Amino acid sequence: MTAKLRKKLKKGNLRNLPSEYRGRFAPSPSGSLHFGSLIAAVASYLDAKAHQGKWLLRIEDIDQARVQTGAIQSILQILEGYGFAWDETILYQSQRFKHYQKTLDDLIYQQQSYPCSCTKKIIKQTAKLGQYGWIYVGTCRQSMANPQAQQYAYRLKCNDLTISFEDKLKGKQTQKILSEVGDFILKRSDGVFAYQLAVVIDDAYQHISHIVRGEDLLDNTARQIYLQQLLKLSTPEYLHFPIAKDKTGRKLSKSNQAPEIKIADKLENIHQALQFLGQQPPAITDFEHIDDLWKWAIIHWNRNKIGTTL
Ligand code: GLU
Image 1 (tube, helix red, strand yellow):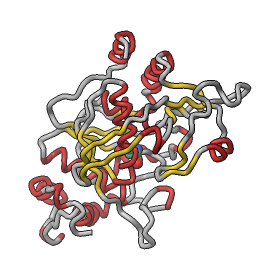
Image 2 (cartoon, helix red, strand yellow):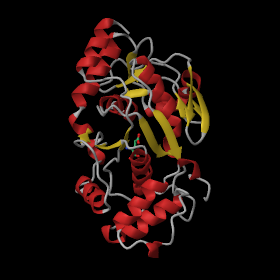
Image 3 (cartoon, protein in one colour):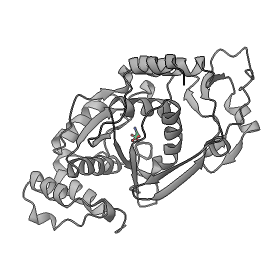
């Protein structure tokens, strides 16, 4: 990376990691919180608090079309009602577009990113299906497949680097970016910045040192580390916990209509989340107030127990 790009990135407030623990919870407001998202909040919160760290909140409202009316307010009310206390001001991705664009512009200038006019149809005809989805073969790397296209995406020109990292729960993870994933998207053809770009820029901006999130995001991590290395940003520590599933074995998610959690059920739900996370709390009847349960949970938090009682 040139001095110019570094200077520009600095202006976009990307800094290196601090020595203190800084964790985060980053819900997408495509719906309210369900039990699966509560587990992500609880695990990231307890890991931060057990390390005397900070816990930050980021609303990932990057894809405005998917933001559900009232979801942000409902997420904040539930978190507050459950007794979560976040440090610092909430970061909204919808207010960060110019930073994402600035980084993208620099990558384009450096010829690290290129426009791609491939339609889904072309991709399916040319790409092969790998274990992480369609592997883009770089059709538009040299020149756009369809120069007449009105809309195009931007992709990252990847090298065949093997990215390895040590997940604190799952151990060593390895991914070959170019051959197993391909040049991935930084900005979609509808103008929406990709999760990979926004999350890397914002984790750096918020000085996040530890990321605790569900294992459904595990295979995204190597791409994020690849981008961090390219942008000369530090790599946080990662821990991916098992995700909650419904009776039919499907991931609990907004798109699967997982039920919204209620403030009235906070004691039961936090107790259940602790059980899910292997923390073996005493019987719920031992806790009169949610604060007592939180106190117990912070003191007894043991990340090595996660996944042991599933
Ligand atoms: N916004 C993502 C979600 O709600 C989480 C992203 C992350 O933790 O990196 O699933």
